[in-house]
Length: 106
Image 1 (cartoon, helix red, strand yellow):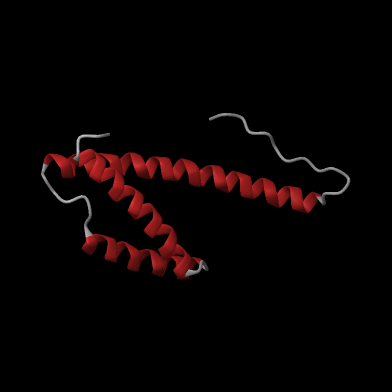
Image 2: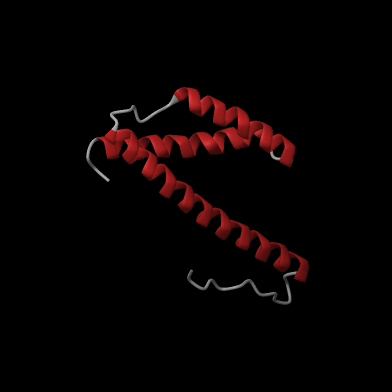
């Protein structure tokens, strides 16, 4: 992992703001790494689907995942509508990758 510059406080920036921004930066880095791991798994799924001539999209699974993540979001205090939009963006990208894999382009 590359070293990122850490936020520093100057005279105009309150220390609490610097601390919170540092936490946000760490969370953002964790999200990126988690997304990278997720996409490694979905790439493997795409290969398996292509080998077995399965369709790139699985609408029934997508519906179950959206419903499950809406509940998780609500329990976590995150707007379920936002969570659904975020997951929808990820699912669309995964399907795009699966279509490329099925077409012989990785």
